Length: 357
Picture 1 (cartoon, rainbow, N blue to C red):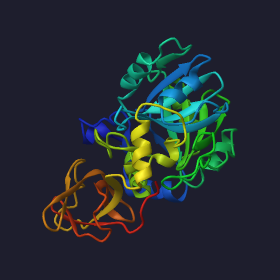
Picture 2: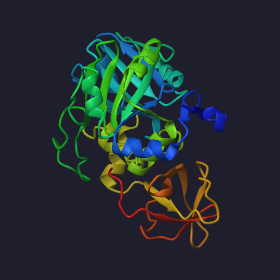
Picture 3: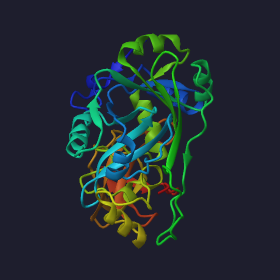
Picture 4: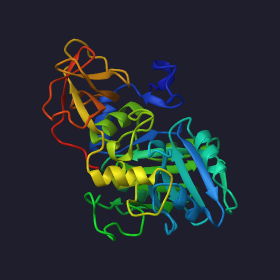
């Protein structure tokens, strides 16, 4: 089997260290869309928090309601700046004694630094365990079959609370994490966490090779995972965000932000933007014509109106096996859904199906 690493194609990519593809990216996309594949996402950072105060402490400094997170439950959370801009995004899993946070490649040290600064007198101990733990992802509709073979399936489907409208009544959001992902301990060590795309396996790095060889699951590269992620409108921090991104712009309210939770850094901005009902920008999927060039535009490429005015920037751009050349983009709220747009040398149109909040 041919393995093409991300750094073989883009030496400067933060996704270095994992396979981009195994010889046929389009086939790998179809595998993830129609069956199930195993994606190595072992370049993600992993931070643990131990100590009896960990959940109440994380509840007070992040956007998510985790004070009463039940053992073997997952969710998502954000860390915001004082002005409400997204600084960190993490997947969460609590096993009853340790809270596991997985974040974008290379961002674990910065997340650990923030957590360490916020300890004060709390009985918590954050640590960067990226060197010892890895993330593998099962992706596709047949994920449950593989989880059952691992001895942990089936796991309940993700449970995500709907985002209430502006100026909602008190009590509209239940006192729980706005997203709850069923989790189970793997018999050989580590955990499986149900996710919207399948399931994440958080496993010791020393066991990755034996686990992957024991599973009857074909591998798929990160390119395939990214193509399906873009089509589904799931943003990545640092890829589809910038220094001024607000949670409401990027679609993270439902999964990662509890709108009735008490004060945390950036909470006033979150509440103000939600009550106004219109964040400055919105996340869209752009279809690129690919006539002049079939090369995906680089992140940060300007999105320009027919009149030549900049109205947004691209994030991740991919070649999708069905949709062709597409890109996530943050555009101004007032850009019409049927606007004629330009991205580099390509004409662009907004997908008519908007993403959720």
